[in-house]
Length: 182
Image 1: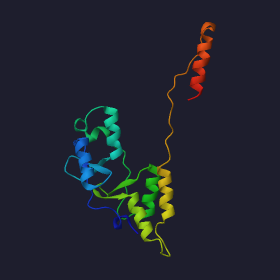
Image 2: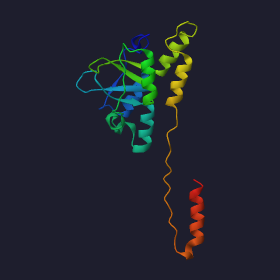
Image 3: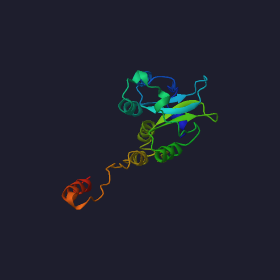
Image 4: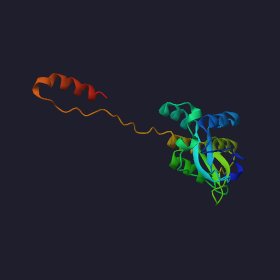
């Protein structure tokens, strides 16, 4: 089974000059959670990806209305992609390594042809469930999902408290105890 047989086509996309408000509207209109970002030169060359999560995080971090933030300001520029003739297992491996649920499908010139999601893989695995020779299994899709969902390490930015002179020792001990409880 090849990617071209299960990918979503034609894919929806946006450009870096679009606002996050426009990108969110496109996602809502097309019932999708991400959009490949294509070059402004009119080609379908993929230059980034934006997800609904990217939009939510940008709204919080930038403190501006979505109409005032450009896709190009928050999109991921390092994009992993797959080719239409690749096997589904190759896409599974890329998703797991990159920690992403969706991959743009591109040709040899990086022109956008489709979009492959983990959901596409899950539906195919379910369809093949009773086949003697499955191309992809539900267990494999589950393993990829588990890889993708690994929590990132959270750094605790608690300042280091240095020991003060003896007169403030009690306060230092309290502060140190609080620090250790984080």
